[in-house]
Length: 68
Image (cartoon, rainbow, N blue to C red; front, side, top):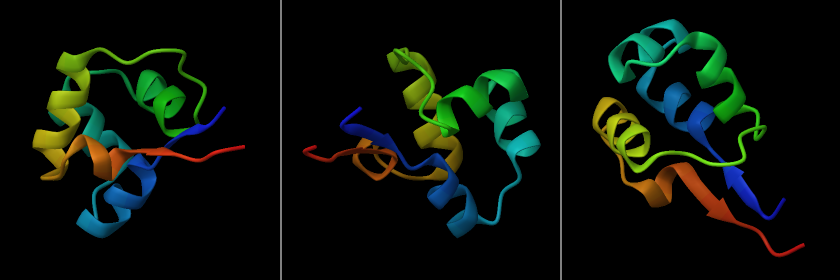
């Protein structure tokens, strides 16, 4: 898939654990794991907004397009 999710990179930069991020965003750790590991087929804008708010970043920091 040419869309790469960089949540783990931003978490490392912010020194934030997956459990803390999941709690701040309001999703389960299992769903956060699905997002982090590029297994999600879609992401709601409300979830993307909450991730950006919690990680103090933009959607472009979390999502990257790589031409295959």
